[in-house]
Image (tube, rainbow, N blue to C red; front, top):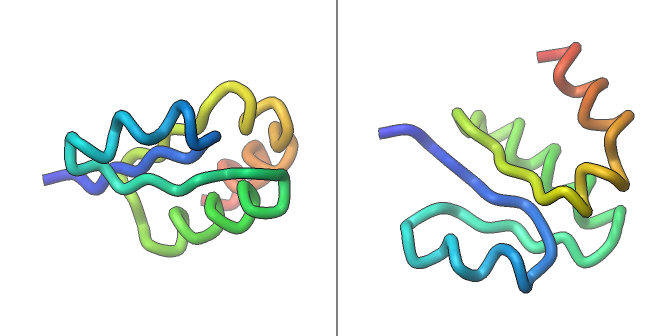
Amino acid sequence: MSKICFIGEREATGFWRGFGIDVFDATNEDTARKNIRLAVERQYDLIYVTKTVAGMLLDFIEKINLNS
């Protein structure tokens, strides 16, 4: 089974917990960045990021993709 996580604001992520998907809340840019790093370190197969979080950290996410 694939390891899947969802990173984003609490209002958008709570729903996914019911499906057994790991959820990381991102209340600000720092926690979002920390949780994305954590998800990469834990080697999730699929990391969903909300549009709001992605907008805040687009350069950071692209950098991680290039290093993966």
